Figure 1 (cartoon, rainbow, N blue to C red):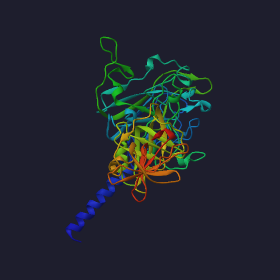
Figure 2 (cartoon, rainbow, N blue to C red):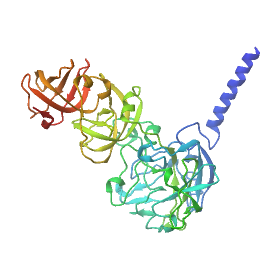
Figure 3 (cartoon, rainbow, N blue to C red):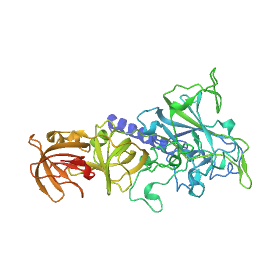
Figure 4 (tube, rainbow, N blue to C red):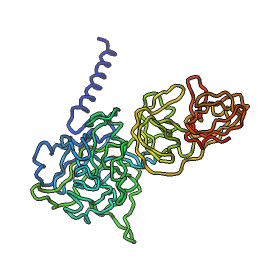
Length: 454
């Protein structure tokens, strides 16, 4: 065997050994969006701490596992015990990315549930969350109620108290294809569990439910981190306000059971369980989504609905830079601000997200259409947008007519029942969403009779 061959074999063995070590060494997984290493596990006392089904710290590594919002999967959680803590490490820096959905940067998953499926009434065992860049200096993700102010049995256990920036407040859901009944679409764990659920706001019942685009869990924004006087206690400035940490990334995350001594008769101590911690995947603009290779998964956050039809609706970036069709039966209205996740799919001369999950984030007025010449309507850049075209009516048929503006390009207008049909040669203005047929002819699909002006 030549020296070169020997060297190649040694290198191959080293690579294989490193791979096996990463996979087989306890507390370590291969690279992923989840926490990969257990740094320390210091459980407090509790009835589950000595149970090997709940005290194996490595169970908090890798992906989470859920069932429904009212049934938890306890096969992959690790208990903290009363006042205990768990410290995990990512194999990369988790950054404060303004491009992340909702501005959230990471998610902590647990076995919280909605009692009886009621999102206003939960079984919650809160743990406060800290982050660190070096594993030594820690910063508190400032919660809406400080740990020292929590009341056992009122804010913990079965509770109606709305919590933010605590772990074990929001349930973890199963993958869509694993639910009962299953949803007619599939997601990988990385596609579902890296999309955050928005934090709950007291008095806003819509915010209490889990966003359909998310797999649940509690989402955190690095920008909410503050300096600590001690673990779970924020450092205050001269006006009694918490001092912002001012950090833009972290690598270590620590979850600590927030309240010592809170119990439930017959059940024992109330203490948090941790399932997983995930780095949030960034969202993309509508324009970027349109240019992604076929089959690529995309997260679009904060786009606006421009048109809604049976079985589909259209969204566009709020700056009117790009639009796209969403194949969905979900009821939305013009002006709704939505989050959409799914795979980009070719559709004739255009693209569509054909397997979407959709969350309505807010409501607004319908955006103004973009005025275009027919020639511009035939270009790639305007596809999917809400547009307005004008010109003389040309050829026509049942439910459609052509518009000519002298530019050499004709636009086909798809009408709706009750809309006026212009006479041949009559000047017309049409507003609708823009696409193309298989031959490349630009199509404007109007939404209502008022979209046709003679």
